[in-house]
Length: 70
Image (tube, rainbow, N blue to C red; front, side, top):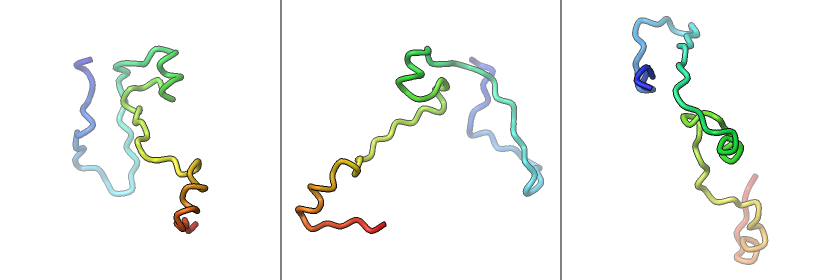
């Protein structure tokens, strides 16, 4: 695991608009069951949503007179 490149690594002397994709070293993986629960096999990509789901709240918001513009 010591071979991983930190995400904060700055790449210098790269031309503008030139794509550069560094090789990623495979460091750790979630187990298959854990990957299904989290939606990714890569721990670095796991970012749980901690916001509020408004899809299930339209009746509560309409009772208070709150409207959501689309």
